[in-house]
Length: 98
Image 1 (cartoon, rainbow, N blue to C red):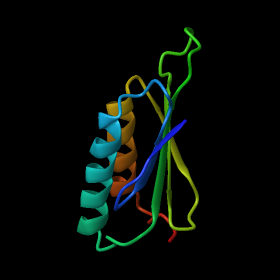
Image 2 (cartoon, rainbow, N blue to C red; image 1 turned 135 degrees about the vertical axis):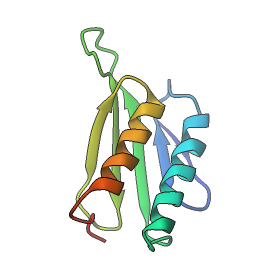
Image 3 (cartoon, helix red, strand yellow; image 1 turned 180 degrees about the vertical axis):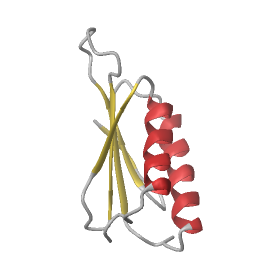
Image 4 (cartoon, rainbow, N blue to C red; image 1 turned 45 degrees about the vertical axis):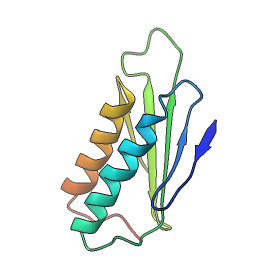
């Protein structure tokens, strides 16, 4: 597992995930949190790929905001996983705990 860290969300990627996905995730989540008025909330994202060929949606992504409960999605690609996380966080009727 590689840790790619800079300002903003901390993103951990599985060894076979394109490093560009880390930037994509940071930008997407920073935009969402800024729009929600929570730009300084600590964010941790983990994106990995399960190599089981029977899995239709082998990419698993998890995000934790602050001390909240993790949100988990499964997707076909890493970018789709990020998009699903952002979509779920944006459309959630109950805000993720901070």
